[in-house]
Structures are given as C-alpha cells and as structure tokens.
Image (tube, rainbow over all chains, first blue to last red; front, side):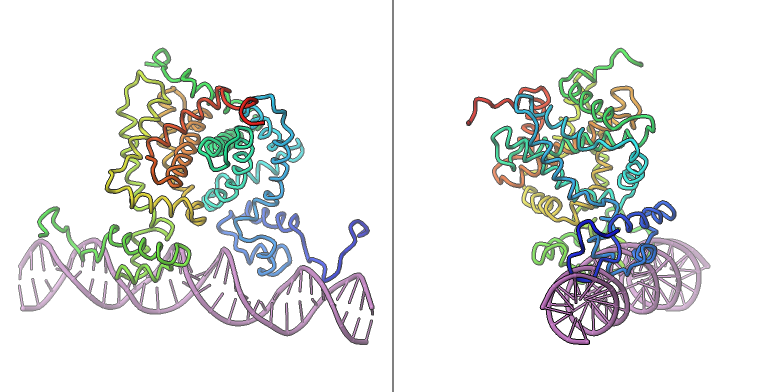
Length: 207
Length: 207
DNA sequence: CACACTAATGGCACTGAGGGTCAAAAAGAA
DNA sequence: TTCTTTTTGACCCTCAGTGCCATTAGTGTG
C-alpha cells in the first residue's frame, strides 16, 4: 500500500494537508471561521497545535490550501500563450484556464471561495495571496510589452485583472446556476464597454 | 481658550487622534510597524493601552486615521458630478478629487501611504478599508446604470477603480517627482488602451 | 461647598494567534 | 542494536484584542 515514492528517512508525517483541511473545513462550516480555534483544528486532525502551525504558517492560510504551488500553472499557461494575440486576450484566456474546476469539484470550490470571500479575517489575509497571483500577471504583461515589471501599466493590468477575477467570483458565488467562465467573460466585456464610454448615459432607461 | 464647542459633560478626553497618530508614526518610522507594540504607542502618547484601543479598534487602524469619515466626501463628490458625462469619466474625476492633497501635506501623505502599501500586515488589513471605498464607487455606478449595487458590472467597476488607484499610488511612491493626479491619469489611459487591444503586439519594438 | 451626574480613563484578567526551543518518537540504515 | 534523520508535540513566551469595573475629572444643582 505504501510502495509509491518510498519513504525517505526519518519519522513519517502524522498527517497531511488534505486531512487537515478536511478537519478544518468541517469545523469552519459548523462553528464559523473565527470561532474555530487552532486547538480545535489540531485536535480534530489528531495532531498537536504546534504541528498544525508547521503545516500552515497561520490559521488564515488553511483555507488557501496549496494555492502557492498552483501559481506555477498560471505562469506556465501564460508562457504557452501564442504571441500573436493581444495581451489582454492572452491574460484573459490564462485566467479562464487557471480558474477552471472539474464539475465534481465545484461544490468544494464554492465552499472554499465562500469562506475566503465572505470572512473578514480572510478577506484581509487574502490580499497577501493575491499579491503573488498579480505578480505572475504583471511579469507576463511586462515581458510582452517590453517594460520592466515595476512599470505602471503592467502593474495596473495585474491589479485590474485580479479585480475582474474577484468580481466574477462574487457574482459566481451569488448565483448558483452560473459558471466562473461565464462570469469572467461578462466582467471583461462589461468593463471593456465601460472604458470605451459605451455605457453610462442612460438618459433613456428610467426617469 | 476652550470656548469653541464647549465641553458637553463628563471627564474630558486625555488625548485625540492627531496626538496618538503623531506618537505612533514616530515609533513606526523608528522601529517599524510590526516591532512597535501597543504598549509602546500608548506610553508614547501618555495614555493607557486600554484607552488606545478605544480610539482605534486595532493597531492596524492607526495608520488609516480618519479614513472612514472621509468616505462621505467621496460620496458627495460623486453625487455632484454632472450626469451628461460618461460614468467612467465621472468616477475618474471623483477619484482625482478624493486623492488630492495640499502641497504642504504631501510628505506626511507619502509617509502614511508608504506604511500602508509596504507593510504586509497593513496590506492585508487595508482590504477591509478598501471594501468601503469600493462600495461608494459601486453604488454610484449602479445608480447611474440603473442596476442593483450587487450586479456584476457596478461591482467590477468598483473593484477595478480601486485597482487603478492602488497602481497609481504604487507608481507615485516609487517616483518622488510625480503627482498622484499624473499617475492616476496615466493608469487610466494606459488601461483604456490595453482593453482596446491597442497595446500588446510589439512585434516592432525590440527583437 | 457638597452632592449628584456623566463620560473618559486605565488597571486587571482572560483568550487566542504565533514563534522559539528542545527532548522524545518513529522510521531507515549500518 | 545502534546511529541517523525527520517529525512531532510539550512548554513557555510575547502580543493583540476584549470584557469588566473601579477611578477620575469634569459639569450642573441645591
């Protein structure tokens, strides 16, 4: 049963991230995030509190799971984009691909994102996670435009792309029947119209 | 000397927000934000720690000062915008006005924004402040478009406008010689070009 | 002047997050 | 068995934030 990737040397881990997250999410949904203490999570996962804090640098990082590792996918996806499409198109496609989840995993993803987007402590902490995500976008855009990554435009595109993605996620959470892809598309096209000035002289509708 | 707005009743306050912020910023710049404890700030301000936490709900709120109150200005500024200009133009003008600071106050503003934008704990906490700021934009846009405030487009505009403002601030902080107005203008126009697809086939520049 | 009344203060105790240190536990290797 | 390696978890500490409550410093009244 334990043939694959044979154990290297010392004492084997008592648990893994998946098990901890299962225990943690059960408690979060039961009592809420803030009301769940690290002690409670550790006990539910059958480990010590100190060990729990070795698996995750902070309580706030638990709902994010292995997010940091997944950023490599986003980077790779961007790198694989053809060079003959507009930058915004490449970015949009990569964001769509990055946020695709299998049908079966949708309920878990909804639960996770609900927690992340509706819990104040996590809304705050997430800013630190988003920063890394934005950097991936920013670096790609800077590369495509031949600008340094700390130039205004690439950074603005990184910030704005994140803003769009979060808007789409909020919409997705509020409407059970929608897909993330739909929401992302709508957010992008709506914003393009907004910036083109094609939206916002509604002298006709209402009053 | 104490004629204006005579004291109402009970024990007079031992300090005020301005005095606390002065003491706090001195310590923040001296030792850094994280390394400054609430006890140290309270002592420097000549008050008890418990009292300090009545003036500010948390340590993270100190650098933000009276931000919440200033949101009323943003709201008013938007409400006063003419209805015959595109929504994005109205929003842009209001954001410019909101972020205008007097020449004399620029150094303090730089110091405050540096702290807010470059301190991880504050980057995180600021997300909660930004939320209220975004809501003001979102509600205005929703009103102009005849949509509910929780519709996708108004929310996206709120998120994106914040993203632009933050990008401009980062640029402003990195370049002593620039004004916030310039940076905001450049961010907005750059993004309009980006979304128009007018940017990003730089087959001519370099290689 | 003494006595209420009122609002701000600040001390005390408590919880919970997070980190540093280190001895014990549990595996493989010699 | 013994050595080596890695994880574990106990113990102790600091600091943010909260509830509670007696104290203090003013104002207003008899």
